[in-house]
Amino acid sequence: MSLEIERKFLVASTGWQGRSVLSVSIRQFYLANTDKAVIRLRIVDDEEAYLTIKSAVKGSTRSEFEYPVPVEDAAAMIDMRQGLVIEKRRHFVPWGDLRWEIDVFEGAHQGLVIAEIELPSADTPFAQPDWLGREVTGIRSYYNADLATRRPEQG
Image (cartoon, rainbow, N blue to C red):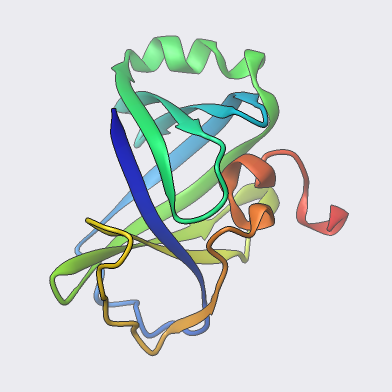
């Protein structure tokens, strides 16, 4: 079992642009979203796919299990999803000793930009770039599993 220790922030400006060392296109959808676990399929650049199971715990730390699956299998399961397909471009931005992942949402959530940082431990200090906005760690409405259940105009 692995733990995901992640902090999430809204992005307040475009200051991160030009610092990205890589970007990928992501389509992801949810097969289950319960009060105990979230089961997600993610297709990256139409070349790789992953099944991820995460514990549904509030806060910055939760259990995470991830397994590669054939892209064709993942694509075939899209019709089994609950809710919307989340579409986004993820940009990887090194900052200090760590790396930010900037998700620029497309499709139903176009205009939303969220920065995430995975930490080795919950108390790891990290530099907060000036392009970060409000922290949204633990606010369910900013998690992809919740975004898949509603369009932005639904609140």
